[in-house]
Length: 551
Image (cartoon, rainbow, N blue to C red):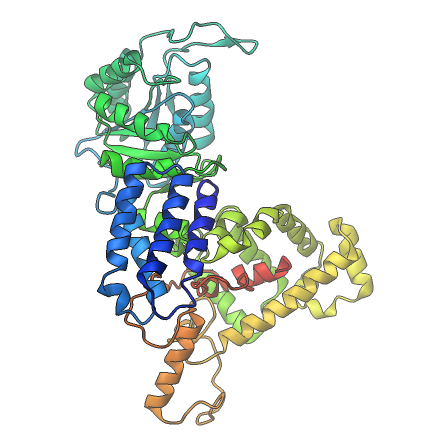
């Protein structure tokens, strides 16, 4: 995430000098702890949190779990990962508290500019997508045009908005109200919204309250009055991830003022240091429930401390990627694509289908950013042009059905016609075809490769019913005929493909086992094997997608 990119780089550099050492001295560990402390302080993490964090890491790193590990450097990373997860709220993460008897009432609180109104729309969209019937309530009658903004956001999200009062309005861009002035009674609006929800059978009510530029008693009194009237099941404190050290002070003030039940981090896509937000869960003891990662309605996700810690340490977030894929990809279509790859009949039409499915996951930058080891490719990711996907689609759609099925028939005149029809140059068409051919060959080799743990989902191995057998007793690749020895060889191959050492280290791995999921698109599963960092971009993202973009 952009807000933690600097912290990720600093922490990655702190571990670099450990990788070449088979045994770590106390000086090595102290040097690493010193770099970690500097990285956290530079990222605006609260001083008390930094002291506690580095103290625990040092104590564990000097213990037997590192000194007796076969890979002490990786064990240190594992310890940092676990302690960072604790700082982010390990053990206190939980789902929303839904009322036994609807409606469930969720009240949003926070400073002005934290993004409460936008987040109300995102939360409403998320709840609607989860099968709920939410109602947004415009109780911010103080900020100019706040009610209008919520109505616009609600319309985009497809969620109804209760707004009996217009609130403070602006005229020609100039606010017509003095600071702190309200237009209407926000407490009455909140109370009436509950009655409406019961009548109209809305099962969730999201109340957007007013904020201030700073914490003051008037702000807290209004928030407490609304809380006392509606008795919310959840009071979510929305905090801007970019506000620096003031985040901790503000969080404490709201915790004492309204006793919020959970935290939502907003603007995690910003380029500020963002580390202060990491201190909130540790300082208040309240869980971070959600994170807003962009401007779109779908840029909103449940917060998992362990996954966020993995992202900060450049270890990726494969589980979130899989969950998104499970929502968007059709398993039967994925199986058909895998069979075509195995048979060598995967054409540009099939690739176009895969491309469109991958686009449903979100931007390519965020998708690739979930892959382990992507921090060192940040410059390439930042320079990646999302419009390249549109150009790729245009080129493929300018081809005839026969050309899409069999790209080998595309000669010079056809390439010129395709280039003219798609508004690109002939060289761009040539580059696309060349990269597709290379990616298709690579995927076919992967789909037919034996001894990979029963086949890789999305590649058509035995688990998919794909992969052709080549002779009954024919040995492949010089593998041993001894079953036990061959099993050991295959295990070593699987470990190598997963980016792990096959030495059987008991020191523990900092990386979770790569999950298997048959609903992923052809080629997407292989991308998840890159868990060790320092490797090239996966060449077959979404059925050869990455290869088509010149990586």
